[in-house]
Amino acid sequence: MKDMEFKIDYMGREDYSYAKRQKNKIASFKLVSASVYTLMLIISPLLIFLLGTNPPSPKTEISSASTSVYEEEIQAEVLKNDSYWKLAKRYCGDGKYFLSVKEANGSKALFEGDSVKVTCEL
Image (cartoon, rainbow, N blue to C red):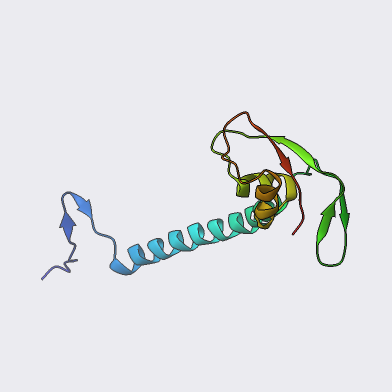
């Protein structure tokens, strides 16, 4: 009898061994994983730097150990959808000053275009 080689033919293609296909899949996965990891190592510090920096604020500040006190009372214009909290956050740097801003303006309703006093005291 003639020496016959057994070959599986699927849709006209010669079948590679299962182990070789798995090896190619694993190699591709490792390449993609290494590329993503390297990209994250490059991009992460850049994102942290960009998200961590704050733009300089237009207020003059005298800082003490625990709190900061601002020298003068600020006249501010109310923008659309503003609240006392948003005004305090914008001009004082923290929304916790909203009560002093509200008291300085007599707790009146805020409308777009109004001029209000902003004091940054607790």
